[in-house]
Image (cartoon, rainbow, N blue to C red; front, side):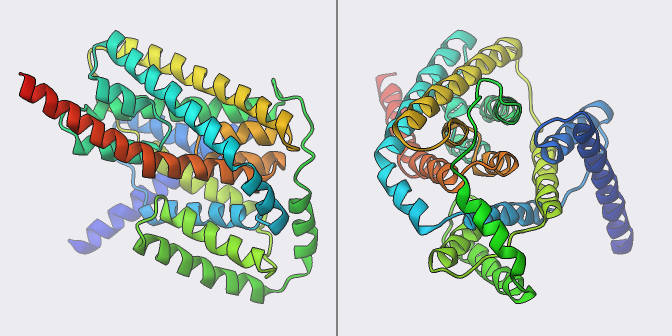
Length: 366
C-alpha cells in the first residue's frame, strides 16, 4: 500500500513537472517576462481549473527556489551599497507609509462597495504577502479568508505580470540601468573562483535557512539565505555567481508552488470584487511608479531600480525581475525588505489590535 502511494506521488510529480516545463517553454517562446516563473504558474492553474485533476509539488522545492533567489540577492550587498541604503531609510519609511495608507483606504472602499466586511477588504489590500495576510485573517472571526485570498491573489498576479512587462520591455521606464556596476564587477571577478567557494556557500546558506526557521523569520528560506550571504560578502568573502539555469530552476520551483496554492472559493460578489481589486492593484502600481520616479530624482539610482524597489510584488518576484534587467538588487531588496518588516512587525500587530478592539466595542454596543 505504501509502495503504491509512493508510485502515485512520483507520477503526480512528473505530471506537474511536465506541465511546468511546458508552461515555461511556451512563455519563453512568446517572450513573456519571467517566463520560467509565470509559465508554470499559469499552466498549473489552468490544468487544475479545467481538468480538476490532482497535481503534486513538494514544499521543499519552493524552499530551494527561495534559497537560490535569496543567495542571488545576498551577493549583491556591498559596503558602499549598504551605506547608500542607510541614507535612504527616511525615503523607505515615506514610500512604505504612503503605500500602506493608500492600501487601507482602497480596502475600505472595496469592502463598502462589494458589501464585504471591512476587515476582509483591508487585509486583502495591504501588500504584506498572501500567506501572511491570510494567516492573520484566520485569527480574526469577522474576516472572510476566501475574500482575503482572492484579493491578495489578484494583487499579486497584477503586479507580477504588469511590473515585469513594463520594466523588461522599457514601457514607461525608458531610463538606462546605470547603477548596477557592483553586480558586473562581482560577475567578472567570480569567473576565477573555485568549487570550494560553492561548497562553503552551500553550507552557509543551509545554516542560514535553518537559523531563520528557528528565529521564526518571515520567508525564512529566502531571508536566511540572503542575510548570511550578504554578511559574508560584506566582510569581503567572495561569492560565486550562479549559472543562469539555476535562476530559471528557482523561478520554476516558485512559480509552480504559487500556481498550486491558488485554490479560491468564490462568492456572490465575485465580479464586483475582482473589478474593484484589479483597479485598486493598478492604482497601487501607478503609485509605486510615481514613488519610484521621486526616488530616482532624489537619489542616484535608475528609474528601473527605483520602480522595482517600490513595486508591491515581493522580494522574490522583483528580485528575479531585477536580475533580468541588471538593476541594483541591493537597493531593491532593501526597500522590499523594509516594507515587508514594516508591515509584518508594525502594521499587522496594529491591525490585529485595532480589529479586536473594534469587534469588542461593537459587541458591547450591541
